[in-house]
Length: 359
Image 1 (tube, one colour):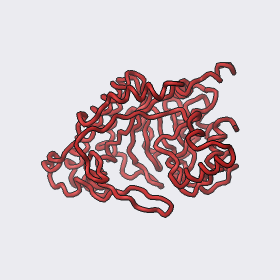
Image 2: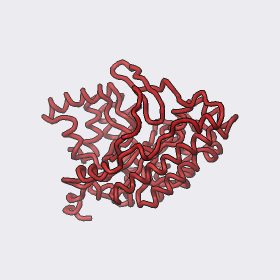
Image 3: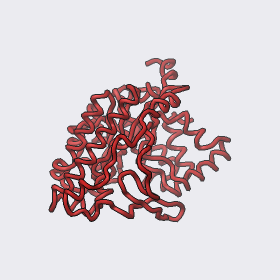
Image 4: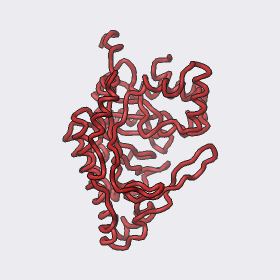
């Protein structure tokens, strides 16, 4: 690809070519399942105003290649801090800001499958999908972007309702209970995904799916347990997504190297967010073993390098990820999760500026 053609790539073309394992004018950039948490964003805003005369939104608008679309909830009124699954959260302070933590698991006390059946399960009739067409038109009004629908996480949604410990206990002691919840959740997610893709009319390129199955030192469950309970749910969702010509981007934090072959088998196209601080996670091994059939997104550490490294260390990690994971295409750069409070503005900019080619 010649220099003139490279300069003319749209956001959409850049991501499409990368996901076809082709090199582009620059590595695509995105913040998938990410962002800059409010305290860090305020500091970044001040730094950008002082040093470049622009705000955070002005900085990110021309460089992020992936944007999301979503339907509008129009269903039954929801209680305070309650989502449409019936999960209630409350804000918990971490000092500089706060996170919403679950305080009520609506299926936490369910004792029988009948209790699960009586839960008020969401319906696709609770959503207005027609707004997606207008979102697509608005986002692409000046330049075409890669568009992504979200969020399809059957196991996480299930344990948000049941409780994580209880869900693991069910897998061992009451498998019909967790299987019943997973089936209900997956049934909705498949129908939800189809309505989103239909409304996108072929313009949605990616569908964000997720289920954290790894901790810092290994999988949260055995591979056989994952194969039995969770993988079949994703196979159903991924099959539907592929029928509409979109790609599956799959998120799991943690040490998941031993599960990657199974993730590929269940139909993922892009692995995200690449937490290389977790045990056994190796960018060289991922690219060498799976880079032919799998693409990658993320990879810049929000645990160590971004918050605690120097700007030069961030720059070097960014260059290394591009060199290894981006060789021959197949890589979309970004942080491994939300950029946390206390992360120096200089480090945030070092990551994105380096990805842009040192501007």
